[in-house]
Length: 69
Image (cartoon, rainbow, N blue to C red; front, side, top):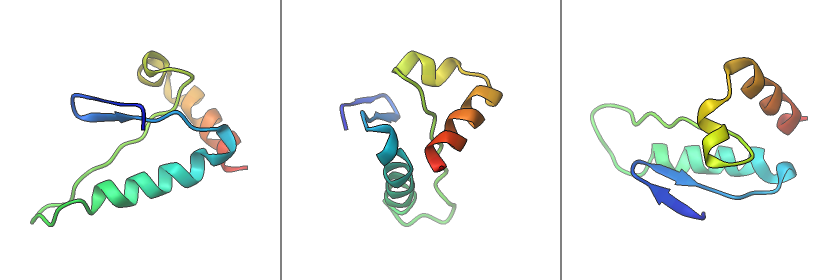
């Protein structure tokens, strides 16, 4: 983990490790505290913080597909 920006965590990971990191972070953060409602954890991917927020859904899907393969 590089930094926390407000309610976000920023990670720098190798592309071949991204799927494993995403799954682990989602599991850990979703279960960080027991609440009566579920915690929603969203993950965006990009070469930098700005890109991860500005990519359209088609580009994000392409990135996700390449990471999962």
